[in-house]
Amino acid sequence: MKLSIDNRELDVAWENNDSVKALKGILPLTINMHKYGGFEQTGSIGQSIVRNDSQIDVVPGDIVLYSGNAISVFYSTSSWSYTRLGHINLNKNELNALLNKESVIFVLKGE
Image (cartoon, rainbow, N blue to C red; front, side, top):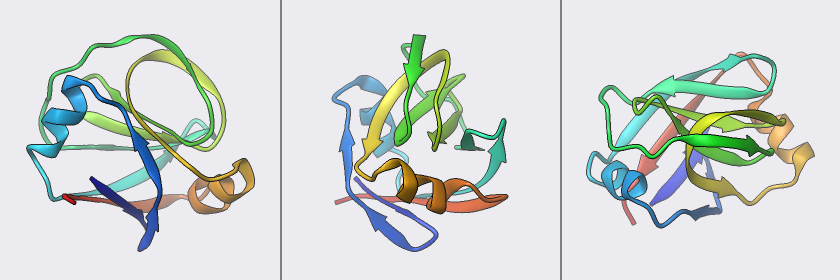
């Protein structure tokens, strides 16, 4: 999968799990994400997909599935019950500049 946020293509290390496989099955996907909690951007994928939530600590760059029907991308740390999807390979300052705004456009496409 290829991810771009606000038209910037990003290097992502995707997890090898059933949720990522299910996400690939609903591509292409465009999500109008919004800032939440001062540490993430989040948005609905429009349907539920398979999930395997567990209590995890997330770090800047982590991409997770929340409640089976939303994606969150982190620019700071948090801890909650999520399913890991991947990690954006940018440093904390780059992630903060990219994500710490009111909204972003998150686009997933196939390879």
